[in-house]
Amino acid sequence: MQIITSNDAAALLKDGMTVAASAFGGCCHPEAISAAVEQRFLAEGGPRGLTLLFAASAGDRKTRGMGHFGHEGLAKRVIAGGWRGTPRLGELALAEKIDAYCWPQGVIAQLYRAIAAGQPGVVTHIGLGSFMDPRNGGGRMNESTTEELVERISLRGRDWLLYPSMPLDCVLLRGTTADEDGNITLEDEAFPVDVLAMAQAGRNSGGIVIVQVKRIAERGSLPAADVRIPGMLVDYVVVCDDPTQHGISFGEADNIAYTGRLRSAVSQLPPLPLTVDKVIQRRAFQELLGRKGATINLGIGIAAGIGRIASEEAFDDYTVTIESGVIGGIPAEELSFGAAVNPSAIIAQASQFDFYDGGGLDLAFLGMAEVDIRGAVNVSRFGKTIVGVGGFTNIAQTAGSVVYMGSFSHGGADIRVADGKLSIVADGRSCKIVDKVAQVSSDPHAAPVGQRQIVVTERAVFHVIDGRLTLTEVAPGIDARTDVIERLPAGVAIADRLVLMDTHLFHPSPMKDFAHED
Figure 1 (cartoon, rainbow, N blue to C red):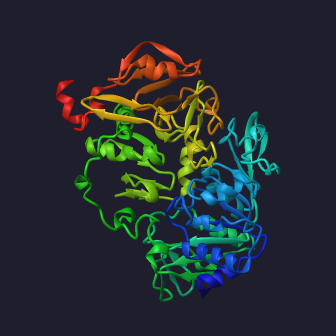
Figure 2 (figure 1 turned 90 degrees about the horizontal axis):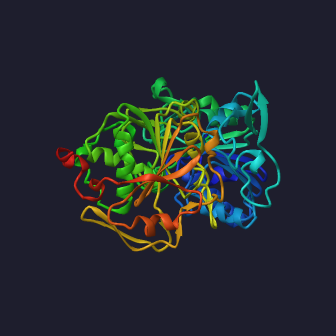
Figure 3 (figure 1 turned 135 degrees about the horizontal axis):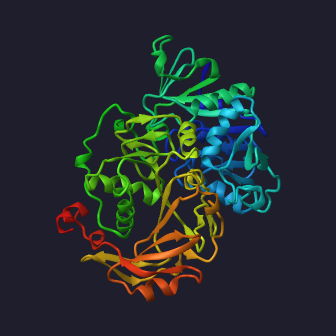
């Protein structure tokens, strides 16, 4: 193991390499190394023609993380689960400047283990019927991407997808402390993602493994049980104690409540203000009230707020899980998403997806960009934006029940919540309930038999009944026909008796304060 600078690390990347990097949103990314690669490219014009592989979204939705690689010529191909955090790469894909693929986040997390083990790839049911199925494009995100990578195969009388392995020439990882032999611990990291499997994959591919850490410790001083990456897998270590390049996330320099070093007094968290989003979160939360003891997942964005709602309502009879590998606690939001305050356990990301893919989730809360009349959901591409699926497909295709959350319309809406009702001052230009989604991120026909699917918006609730989206509830204060029914595409069913959404959703006080009225 050699200790080198971030500039030295950047100089190790050669033209045409396949480079994998750790990250989960704004967490766990070796920012100093990525920034140095960008600086080298802008100064020297190299490296060029890289293939990039990363599982979760890997950036700050601006320029950091894998966004540093978002320059024409630097990358030639990107295979990623989440694209939201790297808009520069998305712009290159939309401009047909790179080959662009989107694969499920969980599949890529598991793929590192397959590469390490010399296996042909990941064989899974995840993605069947979606745009990642080769019958529907094979995960290709633009016209210039022509090579078919994903295969549809038949084993034991069932159809499966094969996501292929590939050798990794360079693996960029992050840890906290390295000893003089290169053993790596992660005590200040929010979670480990898949650093061990990635290091093994790099080593067994004949590639180089570079790890960014905060500090160097004396040889033999790290407890063996704390070492997450053995030194035999590490070629180079970059030391970076700059919190802007080695904070716990792109949103926070540190938060010891994420790592288990401190249990935060969550009772001191202020209540969220009453907004349209909070109405949606509260109505979704009601689905959890009826599932005591459930194991759940919270997706990114609006869905992540369910944990705060549960805390406000003093409800804790459930176990929350996040794709990152975090179990328990209250999920963080925005650039710290993936972490949680006061987690009870933290496991590898791929192991979390093993549990999801096998049907371990009782209930999942996920965002949505648009939903169509048969219940297909798009979260991955809309307009001129490539977001990717992240862990959405893994979860939507396997959970026992799924609650999709989002506003009813978008584009210029002015909607207010007061006095126990909803007031639509100005509606959005277009409805998110459509005849056919632009891209199928999860095919409802690939979901487990009996899966309960619900769509929650601020003014209406829908259930998928017999393969058809059905309006079942409307908000108090609105005109159901004008504000909802007339905006729906033909093909959406209307329940024989529409139910009024609980008026307690539209009051600022916690809903439990009204329990005596029921």
